Image 1 (spheres, rainbow, N blue to C red):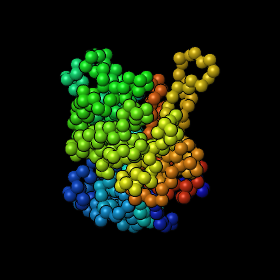
Image 2 (image 1 turned 60 degrees about the vertical axis):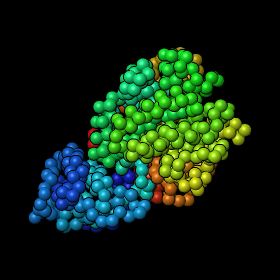
Image 3 (image 1 turned 90 degrees about the horizontal axis):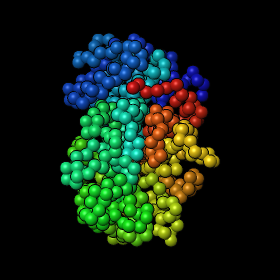
Image 4 (image 1 turned 90 degrees about the vertical axis):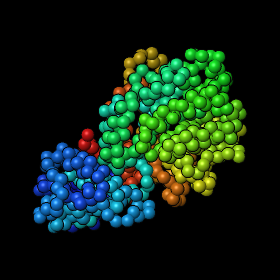
Length: 509
């Protein structure tokens, strides 16, 4: 594709743009926007005001929001929330461009917002919009990003910048992984008030930070999802409690080396601590649609220190906590059906599927194989595709050089993003297989129970890495995932064209 044609292409690509290239509207000729729907949908006002501010940054044109239909309709953008929501056409919208101006119609506020993302990116890429009709929608409901803020403090301004990126490429969920073995990044009171200890890392996201982020993200149609990982990945909390009171808390974990990071799910004292933390976090994330309650890498079941049913019972109890608050429960796929048992999660719990096995236990003798995707679908679960072979990025300090003794930071990354592989091979129907080879992936033939997809930035060894380096390193992979989740991807144009579309373009912050 010629570069001069690329002004009519955006990321993610639109599903359909039937256009008349002989006629167009110049963005600089626009005067304002009009919407009768703001009376019926007050939340729409913030979305339109945001668009006006961003449009000014992109074009230098100051639009006004008017309440009556102007006579010069050809110089206005008209927005309307109308029509029926179509099944499997998520966040659908239509843009008609002709001599009467630009008209946007969508059955939801979210659809209108994503139409503004399309118009804004076209305005960033060129001075005109050709006459024609754009019909656009996502093939999956949720397009998300997980940020591991537990093991690396990521500042609120940086997270907001990432929200801007997500919104610009029509991604709509941000999962904050807030607690892990190496960190606890959420301001919490119950630990000191009830237990006399502090689980918090030296720098945390405060409750006011979270409230500000939720509002900021909501204006951009990005849902914030808290993530508290248990009963595994509990080293920080377990050691803090045992150090403070060895007698009371001795039995809250397993004693074998490397297994003491696992909460003993049958110990009522330890379980109560986690229940209290989750209750407090529910209050901080009031109004958010979902809460991820963990279940990742619970090694205690591998050597039979805990049974499958005990682990699932614990997870079901945590799920019930968040469901009682009006939030959807989510867990990782590790324990579900892995070793049979008589208890499984309720089918209302959404399963985030990241791996088909846990290394080094990826042989049946150790019970390391996870239930295949098809089994979970057959059992009635909705899934989030978090394929570790494509959608994982782990920024790390490079320690691969022989005899390296220096503490100086090397920006070389060991675990790199894979934008080209995502673009050319991955789709929301390609789930993690037993190796990174494409032929080893699990491929399903329907999106019917695929709720969405999630890109994951894990900060296991990233404490000394600058957050801006992470942003720059990951953005092409994020855009590739957005393209394959929403748009047409490699069916529309090749990877080199996609890279050209991405290079030199940055969302408005």
